[in-house]
Length: 363
Ligand SMILES: Nc1ncnc2c1ncn2[C@@H]1O[C@H](COP(=O)(O)OP(=O)(O)O)[C@@H](O)[C@H]1O
Ligand SMILES: [Mg+2]
Image 1 (cartoon, rainbow, N blue to C red):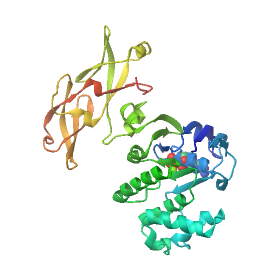
Image 2: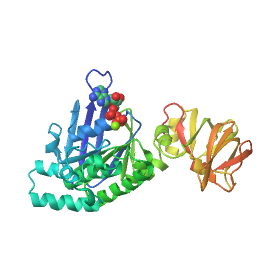
Image 3: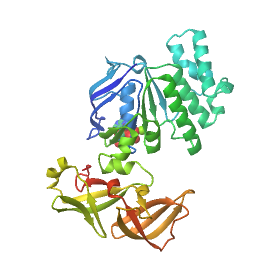
Image 4: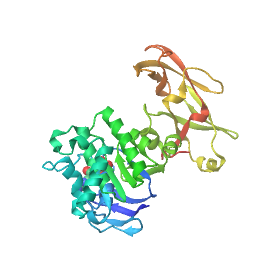
């Protein structure tokens, strides 16, 4: 039962003006799967490599199970890492690749065999134990890389975009495999990806990173339903959330978002109102699945012309041009209008997200 803690972690690469990670604090509870997600270059691998001991932090402390490992070599940290590139030894068989870490730790031969065979069975690798990596498919290689980490029974698993080199179908299968392994191993895991779907489906907690700075930490549902700022709101969800620029209008106690072709009543929490006296511009966010072509009551309407229609099978995504700007609507395939049609879309004011016009934080 192990937790992982990063305290004031900073990373400044030599010869680079700005730190990749200015100051990062993060606690990962025992047995949790934490997914670090953000765009390419935001510092995810750097963070993971510091936890692994492959990169030295410029400042700060890393604790595994309460033990300061900041300056320990990787082998003494009780971690196992899975890389995007698999990083298998090409001259070794699958068995030897999986056994290697245990040999180094002087685990008894019978125990090595028992663990490798058990894990190979669970990953469907038993028929391939005597093969070399080059005689395996990409998906099989990635299984070996995962198996090699699992046999070591580490305190902490580290995954760096382990599925990025696989095709979409295999990625889904392996994602479920990793979830299963995590559930049965009960180990703590830190998983890095740029893929919002992987983050949503795998994480107990998601950490959203941008330019080395944490934007939000929360469960997948919290991140989706209560995004802390416009960046997080736009990062999660397909198609992307709609954003409408608006004025914050006030009539007595009632607030509204007012923009070209729309006025949406806002239920702002009373505690937020004083701070908003300084706010005049806001951004209204609405997810494409929360816009409807049918009026259900109590809603606000916007009208727009259908510019494009993307058929996804059961659903259709409509791209509209409206006075308020472009709008994306997710709707049933059967009911979807055609390009050139002018349509009314309805939104429930309770389903919107409101962000500060300048700082972009959630209001
Ligand atoms: N060894 C290095 N020296 C200098 N800059 C680096 C080094 N490694 C990574 N970087 C830079 O640090 C930033 C973050 O990189 P990285 O952690 O790999 O991002 P991510 O994994 O989120 O895509 C990038 O701008 C990258 O170019
Ligand atoms: Mg990376």
